Image 1: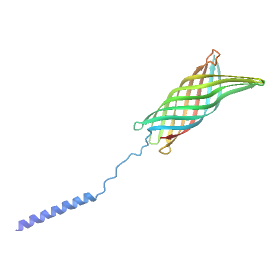
Image 2: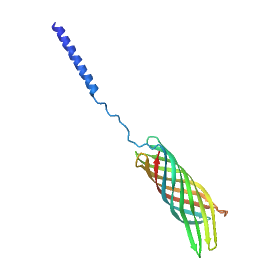
Image 3: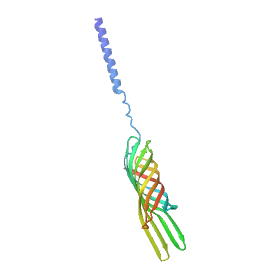
Length: 214
C-alpha cells in the first residue's frame, strides 16, 4: 500500500509539473520578428533638376572657353537594388542657357547650347537611404551660332552626339522622395554648322535634382 501511494504521489507530481511547464510555454510571448530597415531603391522614378554649365569650343587650334550659363530639365529612370548594390538607367533632357556672346560695332554674335540630353547607366553603393553613384552613357546637344546687325540677322544650328561620365550622391528623404547632387563631364563630339570645319564641344555640368519614386 505504501509503494502504491508513493507511485501515485510521484505520478501526480510529474503530471502537475508537466502541466505547469506547458502552461508557461503557452503564456510566454513569442519573440518579435526582426525586419530590416534598409531602404529599397528598386523602382521607377521621375523628377526635375536645376544646374549650371561651363563649355568649351575648339576649331582648328582655336579655343573658346567662355561659354557658361544656367540649365534645367527633367529626368526619368529605373533602379534595381541588389541588396545595397544598385544598378539603374536614366535619361534626361535639359534646356540650356550655356552660351557666349560678343558685341562689336553694333553687331552681336552668339554661340551656345540650346538644349541637350543624356541616356546613362548608373551604379551605386547604397547605405540605407544614402547612395553615392557613378554614371556614364551617350549625350547629344543642339548648338546654335547667330549674328545680328541693324537690318540683318542669321542663325545656324547643328547637332552634336558624344558621351558623358560623372558621379553624384542621392538621399531618400521619404520612401517616395529623393534628392541628389550630380557632376557630369560631357564630350558632345563635333559638328560643322555647314562650314565644312568641325567644331568640337565639351562641357562640365553641375546640378541638383529631386525625384519621385513610384
